[in-house]
Image (cartoon, rainbow, N blue to C red):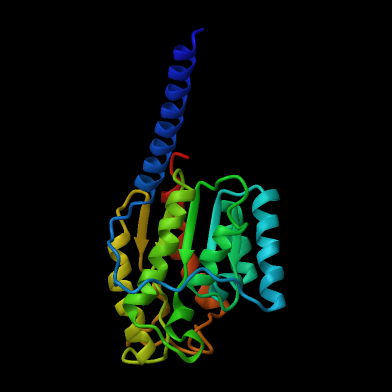
Length: 255
């Protein structure tokens, strides 16, 4: 082969490699595209780990579980997921092949860090349930506005679409907080939900607001359902599970 031929072959090889890289990047970007546009020009909090020992240990356990435990669905969230009632979980979630990937106290930036650092390193699940953002409402005494909370949720959703293009995502609305319908945190959850519902497309991302089943006829969150007006009793989780069952079955239909 002549020197000119070798040079031409080298140029072609470089061009082909760059084309493949560009195609892969374009494909990843397309898969990460969401129906909802950014909710604010202010960027969400940067991905960050939880620093206390229990959170670090829990994150490592989740990474080990996704690598070694056969599962079909990954349930991502905070204490509302981690503290899911064990009996209700065994009856409803376990038969459907769930891994509980919730960590107490997580905000959106903590979950995003976990997704980028091990919690998605196992075989890709067929479905993902995403319930995150309620801790952003208080943010350790520095509450975030609804638009910024929604943008943190959107950041996680976009990363999931890029990393798990074949998985369908069930995006859950923030669940009710505060006893009364006009409680400040209750109004804020509604404002966040009005934003993130725009991310649902009925295909890759299915949005569902199931929190209404937790409320009584007057719209109150009673102590029998949520003793601290945030976390749920067994009765509360049973109500949520009854709503989740058909949603998950629909998410996994044909898979």
